[in-house]
Image (cartoon, rainbow, N blue to C red):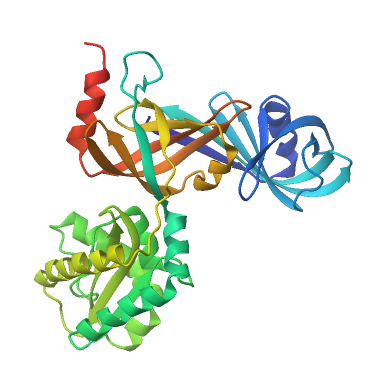
Length: 361
């Protein structure tokens, strides 16, 4: 179920009242907590402050993320608690994000007779990768030391970065939206004019990466190749960066990718990553995405809006690895549904063939 979204951010207090009236007074409301979503009810709004009833809890955090869902719109409100009287909590808004979802392709329900039952399991999110890498720091450092020992003598500079390391890294942020290797033959070279993709990457690198990397500037390092580590060949969890004072050949990119494939196998065999054991039933599918459903709220901890993850989809006699992003989470009193957009999948033909087999002839 591929969806586009239109996002509007509201930070001006003079507009808060209208958002509260249009969404919080009418929609399904819940507070996002660390491991759960808590259903609440609208009580009143006065002077831009908004009161909710939450009879199942004795207290709430000082700052909360309160969500309103109305039809195809979600509103995420950042609010600060200013008062509590028994089970009535009053908040003052800080900002709202109003998200309108647009479905672009037709979804096919799997909850009717005669349709094949399919599941997903083996969930590993981008957040899980960061947590796993940091909790297994000793193993990770051993792998990093192996890489440095093998490659350190071949290049003027080598760096290994893994998910969860601080501070936030501009190269890793690049790979979160683009899994292609960075190849900069010469930072001082002018755009070729003939290779648009290479020229765009050179410009992005110069303005967003090189501009903030003072070690490269001071070391007179003009050439770089940086290649990501990919979980299931899809989701980035780190990278190897090499730099040289002389131009690196494009063939070095292929050599580095081959080397990284071996390192990824070492990460895999080291049992650093811990996929979830839970299995979830898929309730609808489309070529662009799918949705799952479950009843137990404890599983909400696995999902967060706009967080990417790898999952296995169990299709007949095949398991398909998918890289997806969570687009919406809709809890109600009986069932929780989570919708995903597919970013990449290891076997597109198999998945599309399955979708086509469900479509009316």
